[in-house]
Length: 86
Image 1 (cartoon, rainbow, N blue to C red):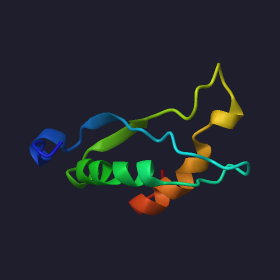
Image 2 (tube, rainbow, N blue to C red; image 1 turned 120 degrees about the vertical axis):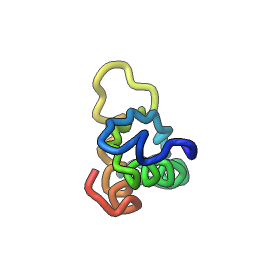
Image 3 (cartoon, rainbow, N blue to C red; image 1 turned 180 degrees about the horizontal axis):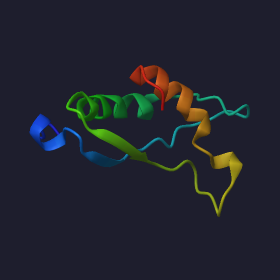
Image 4 (spheres, one colour; image 1 turned 90 degrees about the horizontal axis):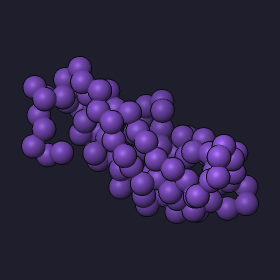
């Protein structure tokens, strides 16, 4: 990513596959946010050069649509780390 500059990214949509498969407790609270924190520099780099970032990830190994494996519990922490609404 470090070789991409503003001319490459400004106004572009960038699809990023991130590993947000973090452990959650029984209350769906994150118990270790290391993987989320690891994605932040890349996301900030891309948005800093004007890209619109589209994130893709998974949680667990769902078979179909399963609320237990929703990424929704991760959104507040990712928003907090990025300093913007996700």
